[in-house]
Image (cartoon, rainbow, N blue to C red; front, top):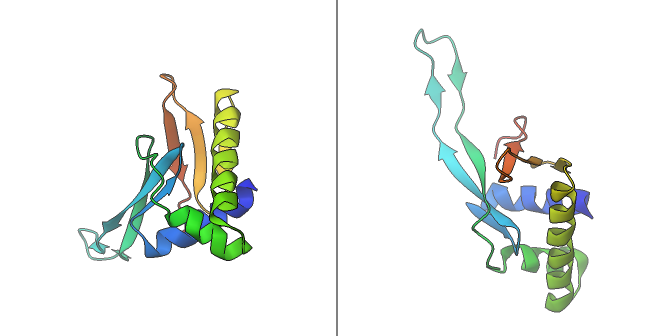
Length: 125
């Protein structure tokens, strides 16, 4: 389930600036303009940097509706999928493990028990 939801989140980040996992937190994608280094020898294309915000927990419906469409299930069933996923993520993290979301990145707890995200750096949203 984690692998599949990671792919859903990744797909949504291509088109949206914010994707919330209800009861867990949200991903915020920030536009980064193209850059040229000082000597002009390297050009970096425009991209999005992805951050995780634990405080964004209220269901905005985006992920739940996407799950509904992808799996052809009801809203309540999709909400339950999100709830189960949130619980599984927290259990994994708080048992001192890292949590990898396919095509998104790796979550871990810092020394102060805050959830941190190491985004995958090979994907340009």
